[in-house]
Image 1 (cartoon, rainbow, N blue to C red):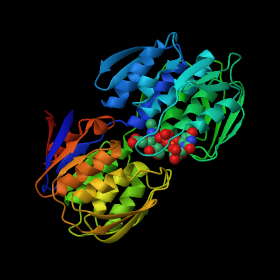
Image 2 (image 1 turned 60 degrees about the horizontal axis):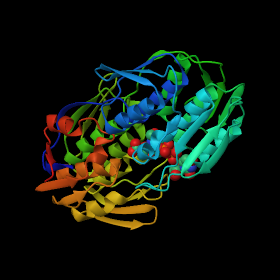
Image 3 (image 1 turned 120 degrees about the vertical axis):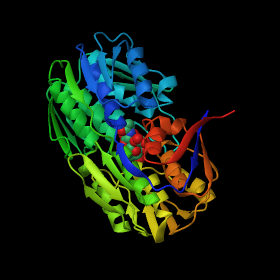
Length: 421
Ligand code: EPU
């Protein structure tokens, strides 16, 4: 199992380029199942979750051609096996994204139910309810969700009980091939939803309102092939912004969409970092000499992303005063806090809140990554800790960050991947 060995104390300097968004690439790949024609996707990040989705698409019978340079051509000419098996779903919950496309395209889908997850229960009941409202008959047994709609899906009004990102995406894909109009109420407004809608529209779908909480989908009989470039990964961009802030560095973050990280940049500015737009798609961030504590509450987009909460907590360990971090999206997303405490942070957990008192001198220690974003938070803490930090289970970080150690090392960080004995 790989580990990261990090020696802290170097302010990051230079330029880091952001990769394509994992959470946009995954639904885009699932959307390729909706058409028998080839779909070409560019700026697909080279991360483990994408490999898992490639294997899942192949399992259904789709052909995948790697065109190099982050481009893939997916050709689901025929779907021979409309199934997402447990072995795949247990390693990547986003596998449930194939549920909507498979049932819409083939009239049947069999997708393993995801189990618990390091960050919370993460059920898929909202996906299932919505598909039922679109006319699918859903049976849940033996750990699998089986959806059938041999006569096709019918458009309707879907009122989500709460905002769900992949739930909205699943319904968008299913409704694209449903008969008549579907209106999604309380839709997720995340940029990844907008990106998916753009791809689907290029494929011939008729979707209006993506990016707002009400999306209208006029179903069409068939979708065609298309070519699409995935948006920049806003969580990766936010992680590098946090890395510059925590190390007091001076970084240019290129290839990003500044608007997509507004909620984070507002907080980091209040905390004392200086952040400016440096040309199209670039942000320059200079860490303040003394950071101040600033409270944060995670929310759906355009609020502060839960996927940046762990990284922000690492930054707040270095800020003067007490910051209250409230997690509202997932019930168990503070696993990194105990590891940060082992490095010297002063963090008290009270239910959904973490009280971080700083600044505290962190010292390098062996720590364990528990999920993707928690791993990123430990990397950030290690970048300012004195001495060496050994981060175990970095396979979590490899799920969603492309070559993070190379990108950070190019900006001066002393980080290397080591193989454990
Ligand atoms: N929820 C339900 N029932 C459902 C679906 C969701 O109760 O059927 C609950 C969840 O348990 C959670 C809340 O609704 O408490 C929101 O979950 P959501 O469905 O929005 O999360 P998701 O779609 O499973 C995506 C990202 C996550 C990100 C969340 C929130 C992808 C592939 N994953 O997950 O990304 O944290 O939205 O923004 O897009 C990550 O990249 O590290 C990651 C976990």
